[in-house]
Length: 438
Ligand code: ATP
Ligand code: MG
Image (tube, rainbow, N blue to C red; front, top):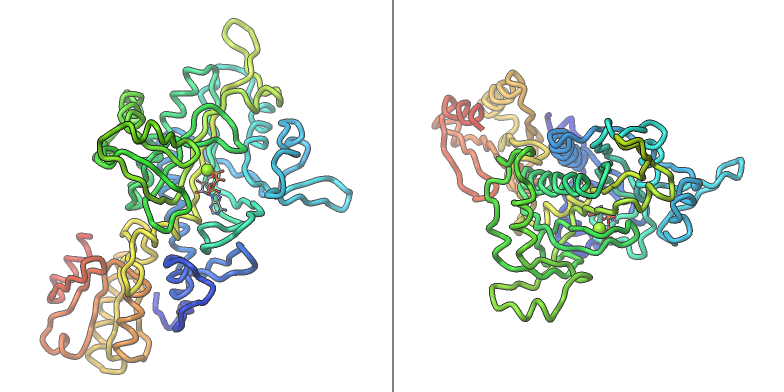
């Protein structure tokens, strides 16, 4: 992609409305724009990151055996009345009336709707276990939308819902999601810690939040340092192995959010306990028959008896993650994208547009990328080298290929690694090899 043909509305000034660094950097690098309070349009660079996060999430859901569907944003109030949550949910729910005076709502979550899909289609224990997920926009009329996409009113969530015949099997499904979440956050270049959590309006008896440590986080968290070192190779864990054993390692370490924190218990333990702030990027719930009972989502057992299914629900904050990743990966110059979610891996920069040799070598490199089906952002704009380099650092692609007259003369080109600032000097052959081996 040539920058001259792209839409990258970078801001020169500091946006006044931003309170935290990720919001500032998202606005400055033209990733998103506020449409109204807590509601954002995603501009090209932001959309690419959002898509990358969604893709990683989907891949891991599929690997865990969950099945993708897509439920609508608008739901009927009727099913929420059946579950008993219509009145309980309060002002966060955006309630809508259609032209026939039917009560609708913009979904803040999907337990009811997925339970309705399940009960109309699944009748026998033979079809279990089942886990259905989708990635869809949610609306919650938050009291204080702030921090840009981190606490929006409209936000993108991946939510999965498990269905099982009994308690024991539903815990197995919960465990699978627990491991899937550890894996998928790691795939995004993040360390998310599972912590004992409150169940809130979703309800249930067992719940964990996945938290990224960050001093701009809204949650107070308390944990034993040991949890940081667990399961260094979580990506290699097979879903068919004994997951309970791995989860026990986590749950035996003290780790709790504010609501579940027990000061006595915390202070009673001498070891390396940490109190800090974190960002909730995922939340999993086990709630048994809370929805299946009132909504009559029953299956027949092998002895012919009909029982309400056991359920759990599992959410990943896809749009919040865009901000959360920036919170945990930036410096004073701008964003440092982890490779796994970067909008482009490479940023090719022509420092002297109009110089025949610089133009030629840049075209050669650019065409090499196209030929190998690599996405690259090519800064071909006729601007000062200083502003081009500053923009490259701001938008934060992992590799910058910097082409200027000096390098062209010597036949060596600079590759700058955005995270360490290290500059490698490579000739054209070495450069092409470097690209192919990423
Ligand atoms: P919070 O405590 O931050 O309000 P929640 O516990 O109400 O979140 P869940 O119902 O657990 O949220 O939703 C699952 C995930 O969706 C959360 O872990 C979070 O990552 C994301 N999420 C929730 N609310 C928002 C929001 N207002 N803006 C962006 N993402 C959100
Ligand atoms: Mg939550």
